[in-house]
Length: 237
Image (cartoon, rainbow, N blue to C red; front, side, top):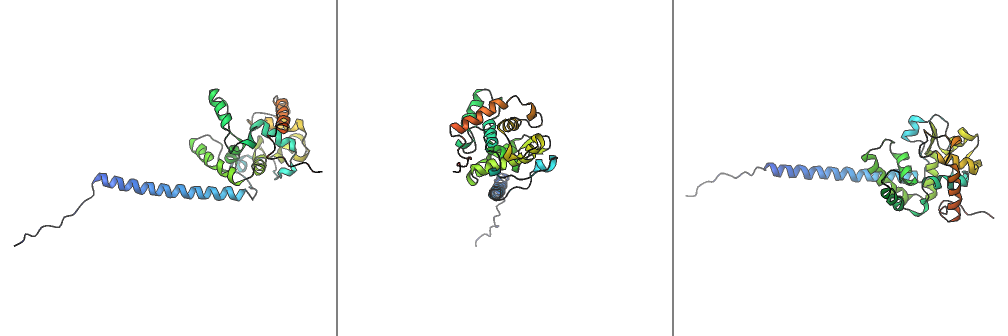
């Protein structure tokens, strides 16, 4: 006679359950991250072709009327002045200026090294308050923009959404508000003064800028040494 043995039932241990939950959680996290990256790529690709109608900050704070202006219709000296003031190596980096970052680290990290591409990513897709989350998203968006947009497109979008004063967004509004003119008619002096306010647009007035002379010199320098080549159209005969 054989003894009848009871069926054996295996119950998962607490450690096994924790591992299963961890695997499930990581799976959901991977799913969310991948879809978030896809959404970001779609948005970046979309605005490579379509002019963004507004941004979070503009929708909340703009008081002056805005009008989209093509880079071809913006004074070339204004474009050079902004690049000279904000990101002189704009044509030579892939979104992050490693030379400037090293300088900031060597100087103790007291000044920023944010490129025009990074600022475009922040201004267009994100929010202004500082946080690690915003910086992480900005770091992901920046190389996407560099990969899918031309340098001219990056600068064009930046100039149309940048803040030039309290409630003044975009170069069309700035030219009209401060100098009563249009972006294509901005002089070298006016351009340098507008570029001078960009680091702190709510605190600086382009009519009273002390940096404008240095910025005007910088705009002339990057024209001579070729650092404006990526966004400068060839001269017409």
